[in-house]
Image 1 (tube, helix red, strand yellow):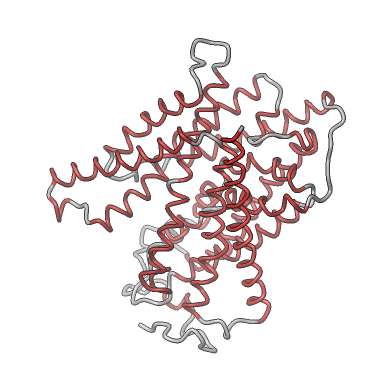
Image 2 (tube, one colour; image 1 turned 90 degrees about the horizontal axis):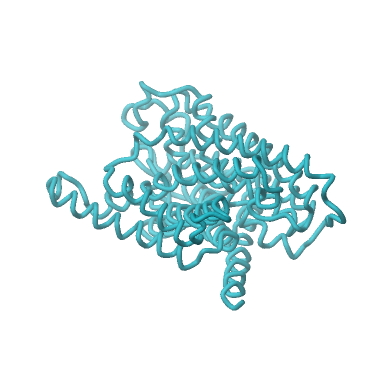
Length: 426
């Protein structure tokens, strides 16, 4: 099959759709699912705890941050579309992962860099979840004997997650948790819209700003965190019976997420103004709505954490040769358990030592998500298919996306590190 050999080609070597259903190139799609299922999976992967932070983004950057959210949504839709197209270039078969795409485009160095940034997502997200679970459980137990402290609650749940994480060889049978998570987040969204609306009459002298330019720099990283899902898109597309509809699925899925985000961001900022907290439910009055929100988010975090960490663990186990065929059943089990105990131990240790949800979310959003959704897809697509064969508007859009990624990476990292330093110097 043809491969891209010159990044300056004025024409694409072939249309990526020409490789679909090729038994010698594409994956087996005989048991593929409907495009509607792929749409659902995409929305489930993207919409998560990040949406609860968007009201605080408006508090930092003003109403104008809605424009930033829409711009980031458009850029993410485009980059997610071309990321899947990259699977069909640069090799004799369809690539399976983002790591493989980066390796085809930029060699081993590109593959290792992709793996590095991927680790910030797949390990950083469980760390954030462990911190949030600790905060949530201690808040739920306020005034009772179970109010033992956020760190202790984090440790309890880290151990709870560690047991299935360490001993389950694969995580295919945990995919149902995406359904649990999506239901939990939709219900939380509705609560975080209704309860603030009911609380509007109790708010006095609420301050809103149209534009806070200083806040735009750090806002990109938090928005990137809320829109991230690229690491699983190759799997979503591989499960489609009609992969030629990926572009449609991708754009509609991201549009749905953007609408959900706008729906939850506006009421929070409108009601509570610059005082709105992250997550949004911490600004809501104590009561049934707030309690249910905390419980639902905690359940979502508990079920999602092993999926993220497990994906990273499995990728590294393949690279390190930890398999029954190579080591035998006993050695494979021992090596796998030791490796995963180490991995979950590192995540747990960071969550306990750095229990600052806002700053960690910005940090992982900057380093992991800004690179994975803004930088890697554009750079790999250009390298694998060329630049001069693109219309000028697409090149300009790609350049603007790269700039957005750099802004999120540099300023997001700077702001979050500065926030962590201030948190520990108090």
